[in-house]
Structures are given as C-alpha cells and as structure tokens.
Image (cartoon, rainbow, N blue to C red; front, side, top):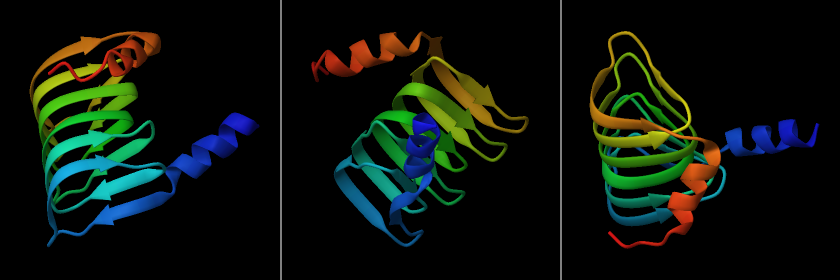
Length: 129
C-alpha cells in the first residue's frame, strides 16, 4: 500500500513549463514535471518527467520515468521507464530497464536496457561528462 501512495504522489504535477516558456540551465525536481515549452541543459530527478506535445528538450536527462509526447535530443537515463508516444521524437542515447515505443513515434537513438540497479549506479557515478 505504501508503494501505491508513493506512486500517486509522484504522479502529481509539481512543476510546469508552458508552451511559451524557454529555459536554459539545470532543473532538479520532486514529483512530476511537465515541459510544454523549450528547455536546454540538464534535468535531474528520481520521479517523472513528461515532455508534452509542444515540448522541445535538448538535455542530459536523469529521471525515474520519462514520457515523451514532444521531442528530446540528448541523453536519457531512466531508473524505471522511457515511454515514447506516437507523436514523440527522441534523438540521442537511452539507458533504461524498460522502453516503450508506440506506433508512429520517431526514434533515432542508441538504446541500452539494463536492470534498475544499473541505472542507479550510473546516476551515482558522478558527473564525469
């Protein structure tokens, strides 16, 4: 029951960039965050990142789950899941235990599926990029 409550809490949108927003820098958050605008930089979270239909992200992304309806260019490291919906576009590198690509999605990436613990060790390995 505790896991279900935690999952529900993480499902709440705690932050949002509207389609007319543009942000360059580093984004750290708890809870779910939705980007419908433009973002360039780094994203770090143990929870869910949602890139909306009009969202454009160029970043190194480390998150628990990543849901793509818009576009991500860069590196995605997800602890649990990357889900690319029919209108979604991903260009870059994906490392995740689970990858879901819907019909119609665009994927131009190097993909590696790993166990969850493998992603956590990548996350804790530091920023030697």
